[in-house]
Amino acid sequence: MMHRGRHRRRKRGKALRAFLAGTALALTAAATMISASQATVAADPGALKPLATAAETDALRLREQLEPRSALDRLASAMGKPEGVGAVLADADHTLRAAADCGPAERRALPVEPAATRAYCWDAADTRSWHPGAVTTSGDADDDGLWGQNRVILSAWSQGARGPARVAFIDANDLDRLAYAWVLLAVPVDGGRDYRALDSQVSGMVWYQDKLLVTAAGGLYVYDMNRVQRATTDASAVGRVDGGWAAHGERWVLPAVGAYRAGATRPDYLSLDRSTSPDSLVASDWVSKDSDRSVRLWRYGLSSSSDRTGLLTTDPAGYTPVNEAYETRTPGVGAVLSYRSEWYLGRTAADDRDGRGTLWRQDATGARAIRCGTDETTRCWSGAAESLSYWEATGEVWSQSGRMLFALPLSTIDSSLG
View 1 (cartoon, rainbow, N blue to C red):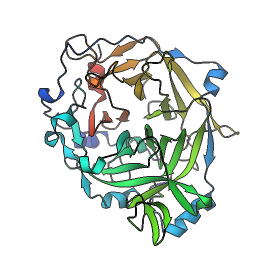
View 2 (view 1 turned 45 degrees about the vertical axis):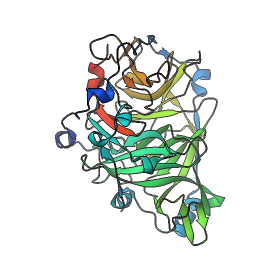
View 3 (view 1 turned 180 degrees about the vertical axis):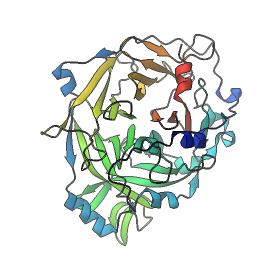
């Protein structure tokens, strides 16, 4: 059964917080400790600088290109009736391990400060040759944290910059046992008569209402969560094959319903901000830590029209206007989150000797970094975490680093700031 077409606001704050509140994980100091001699104080990037000229903001616009409905219906007719998220969760046959069952090498990917309160690791055999990417949740999809009756986490993985991308649909109804199934991301071709793999790294991903927005292959792809299709063969090919439809060996495939094409600058990292009106999609671009160019941060408004659920707002010419934009002297940013006028930026390590990064909170007045306990060092965040996803209903931020999926309250991030 398809989820409601119109995003419906519901508040179950106390019940949901009680469900997801838990005792902090007993992650040992030996698995996560970093010595003061290894940590260094990162340079203060200062206040965010607003970008206000048309030339600066027009470079960040996207152009909407939706697939014709006839092409999507043609593909659905050939493959069989589309199924939804619930069907994928019912098919979940893989599980993540709790942090206590993960090895020291895996746990070293977790932040030192503040400590994760929930952490899980992926099976090495199931993720071998695959690289972790962005994370989003049903906390993004709906403000009550549910998709239908389910609590869900989505985790993106890819086989390099030009390999196929897939998403783990994780059943998070029982946080003591996370089960998941893989869904291959695809793009319709030949007018909906076939599809190809989305061959790209997935650095950003947001699930909003019934749409999944994914940064990949130089643009922002759009997926309809009500159009998940079941593959009919486990062949390693992708698309139409003798005997049916293949999805790189996976049982499920999700074809794109459109894309937003980038101009001079494309978004690399994404998150959702529910503290704005309307809700907004937050983006940043990647700048190497060795570059002297500033990182740009900006946001797009999300449509409130009932016939455009989950899509960005567009002008009459089909462009997405930029609602707000800044630049910051923080090269190496690999994750972005905005909430209540504050911007949180995960930054890779200045060098790779310990793999630790920094996490900054910035606004128009200045910047503060997470401190490693009582000392003045700041390299205590996970250096490989490329995603920050805020589950507003529970107050938790979810992320992924290496083979670790983890969460911690946003309040502990704020209280750890120097």
